[in-house]
Amino acid sequence: MAKDSRELFRVTLLGTGAPPPVMHRFGPSTLVEAGEEKFLVDAGRGALQRLHQLDIPFSQITALLLTHHHSDHVVGIPDLWLTGWIRRPWGMRQVPLRGWGPVGTRDMMSHLAKAYEVDIRVRSRIYSPEGVATEVQDIGEGVIYENDSLKITAFEVYHGSEDLPALGFRFDFGGRSAVISGDTTFNENLIRHSHGTDLIVHEVTGAPAELLQSSEQLRRITNNHTTPEQAGEVFARVTPKLAVFTHILLFGEFAAADLIPAARKTYSRALEVGEDLMRIEIGEDIQVIRFAP
Image (cartoon, rainbow, N blue to C red; front, side, top):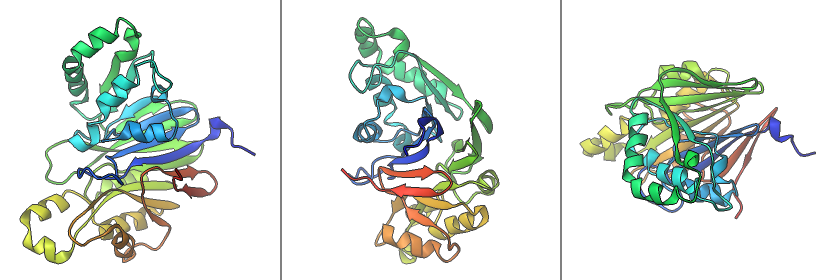
């Protein structure tokens, strides 16, 4: 029997990559479906192409949540905002695009409106002006959205030496929960907010030890992220039903296939290396569904 759509709790990894513009891992973006609501966590390169592959109308996105303002996490916003407004089978939003993000999010969106001023002026003659408006809030740590069945909590994480605020998000729905880490180093606050979760989707970076020893630039980059060994320690303390790697940033000869063996030094339970369009159904059990074109 098909599950009632009001009971659906699903996380889909739209893009599991990092800045390199590769075809098999699009930019960071995660879709969280809770009942009939759809939340997009970050909008990296190709987020709309991935939504289109899933036949999800862009106008149906309830809200956009941003973990931080690095370009690889936000370059898809104009596409989501404007293409979701235009009347097509995949668009025609007639209400403002809602969103939450760290300090600076409202300013960023206001500047986008200026950048696309000509396009907005011309298309507003045809399409609903409300559909191109935005309702965006700067947020910090705390509950940012709540109704009878869903609660979304933002929590602070630490993106290493990067001088910018960064957030993770926890979704609690129907007695189940999922956590999206955002970009972070090993983080005690993330662990505290993730206790008891069914699913944790966590960033990761991997590099050979000899390469780290020879490259100061590479050490700086990896120090802003979480190694698979460190992530394994996070998972061991959180004890989710399933842990999944995303925002996969690899250097040298370190491959995606090396991530799980490295994490196994500290973690032995269910663990997956995320793939673009991987769907994770969260219920009494957790089901991982890989995309079949």
